[in-house]
Amino acid sequence: MDLETLENNHQEWLIDEFVEVANRLLPLYLPDIKGNSKVKEEINTRLVRSYTSQRLMDEPIRQNRYAFYRYRHLLQLLLIKRLLSDGIGTTAINDLLTSKTNEELKSLLIGGISLNLTTAHPPLQSIHNSTNSALDFLADLKGKRSQSPSTIRGNVKQKSQSSPAPNQDTMSALDETYNHQNLLDKEESWTRLRILDGLELHIRDDFVYPNSLKERESLIELFRNILSKFFKRRQL
Image (cartoon, rainbow, N blue to C red; front, top):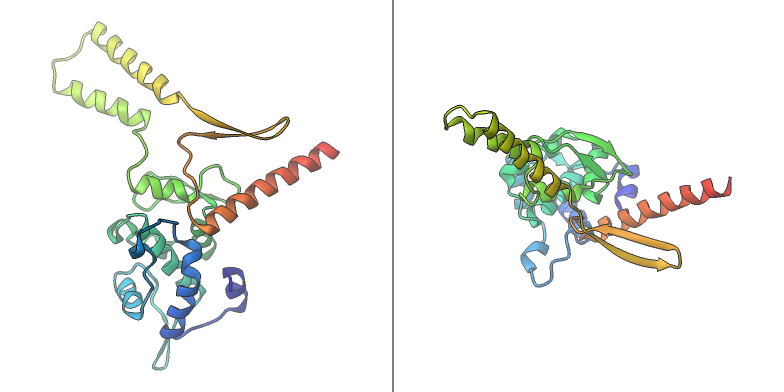
């Protein structure tokens, strides 16, 4: 069973069937955290109803007296569990998952999209083959990323507002401090992996590694596509 098959089959499930399908797929998308059994707790009907009442998921499709769940609900549920497992609370998730398309949800789940993280509900910039992955999104929500240069400059200005108007020398010193900080922000450290003679892989130290099976598969597929295109160009 995989997402592609379920998407193409346009299946609908009653809640008990839906929970069963979700639990079968869940281990593929959760991070590998040894010794943390809570991360891998199974989904149950109570959780599904709770997430729906909190508007983290779309309402089920009502037909007569029955409520059916579809592929989109499955993507949302798997993403909720993934985000929660990374320490991101439901308040931060809010209506993020109900505002995205199925393709965006799937890409976020497997770590293949780039996000503009300026608000609590970042818009998707691009899908597939992007340098930033959904892992960046997870890291940003947890506050792992350092302040941007614009934030640093804003902090400098805020501090100066409470003091008397700075003279030219003071302003020059502030600019010099900012420029120095900007240079520090640009310093990078890389790990160099030798694959074959003449072939190397360079990994920057702040790279956020994929930590679920599907994220690793997505990254490998990205490597495969890039190398395939490169080899084709070399043969022309």
